[in-house]
Length: 295
Image (cartoon, rainbow, N blue to C red; front, side, top):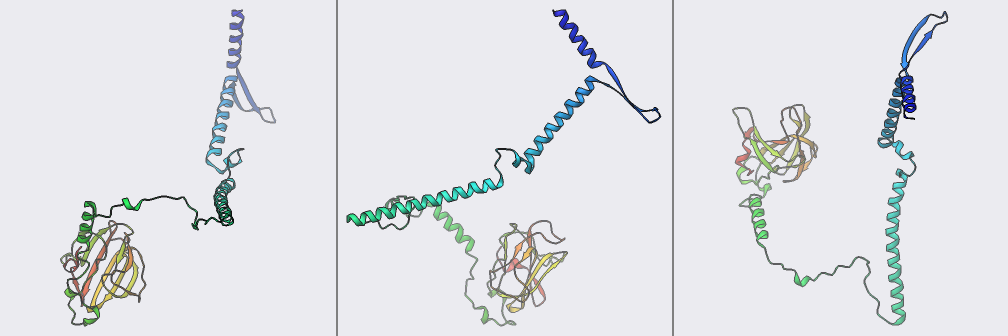
């Protein structure tokens, strides 16, 4: 019995390894092309093709919209319907609570009991305000001190009306200038290297603010400095803001001190990261902004 099984196995394996020749002839019975194949090769090719088809079908179903054709898989419309049903259910529950409250109020009026006067229905949260302490904590004191230190330079020591200064006689040191942006000065004012301003590293998409009341005299794009905005102020002062990602004001618009005029960016060829290049000029002479503004 065992020998018969072994003989049959050998015959089957020999048949799988038996070589066949597939020949193609033309009309004149000349051999054009032939191929030597075995049943083992045919089974291997068929198995490989089946595996590729299965993997390809699974990939199509998993990573393409065809998965919505699979029975039981939720479609986009079904998902939207589920969301709408949840919203409707929530609204229905709210309406039911309103109806129950209305009925209880009517029953209270009929029985002579004073109904509840709560007009809104919400989850009631009972808070005992008597246990809340309003004393100043150590953290609160430290925060107050930090804020006071940051804001101590936001107001001039003496108040002056900007309109009281003459554009020819006003002293820039008597005018309170607003900080254009919050950041760290990375490059100083240097006339020797033709660096007529300072570079301030700031957070991307931060607000750039006008240092003083004035009128926008230029709001353009340049290839070297990107989006640039210039503002004419009193006392013949001009402030320049370069490398912005976008400009919020147009030429000819009036701006207030501390008003947002642009957004910090990295535009232009002469830049290496998000920062603001800020310049101050008076009567055609460049000024060092750090001598007039605390950064």
